[in-house]
Image (tube, rainbow, N blue to C red; front, side, top):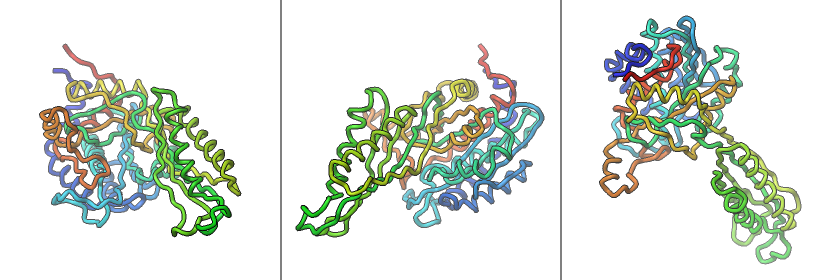
Length: 420
């Protein structure tokens, strides 16, 4: 059977089983006490205290973020990241460790992420004779609002820790527990939200000829925006344009003087992104001119998430390490997702390569049932669902192992290899 890096992984992970109760208790604590973006004070306190006990040098950055650095001789510098925040969702899982905070739950699995990285940090700290280099762990706040990674950078992260040779991250997904999915290139889309306010001329509902109706103008914009993907985007290129909200007026017999649209776009390519944004601006300006709008529209870009575009060399190295440790049957090729993350802000700030993979967390029996049901889509709650509840085993163990194995593919200084 193949060994990984001369047994380094086996040495670091030898006490994983003995820590299983601790992992479950830690996960349940995080799950039962979720905190919204930039409010992760208690979670940060737990993490900072644990890292200090393990021997990490700890800093509190980005408001509620926690960064730990463990220097263990010469070698590569690896940074691993986990996000911390929960969502404004009322939990409906019925679990005995369900959220105790009304209207807030870990509906995206960040409780898994914190637990897995904390577990990896513990094991790496306890076995420093098995590896060499520096291991940096970043517990990032406010991923859900796209501001946490930027807050860490703005608070001086790039000047306060060593520059990493690689930055690693993972996300629990509705895949069978026990599976990992990796891929080079785009794995999560870029996302941009726009707030567009168009201006009209208010009037009585009985006197439409005295108005410039912003509701009709907004409706025309909504319909025209649909042509960006269907008629302006090359077949085979990926783009999504969604109008998630249209707000105007307050009563039936008054034509208002303005309307606001909230628009979201997704893309895997900066060229496509730039083209879509330009098309939205052109369409809005054109429709406003055609309607005789008394003033230009206000277009505000907000809640921007960058593209997650995995480095090919780093991802190949980590995928090979996963295949050696877990077996190739447990590692699959990730399908690019249209969800978005701010993870890549961190490696981009350092100018470092990165790799981000997906961690299966759903009951495998649900997928077996789907196969028995002629391949029908399994009833697996997705991220952000009030029913989202990763199974603890083997998800937590796999998450810890993935962080350790990926880090050791650099910290041991050699590529993993298969034996015949």
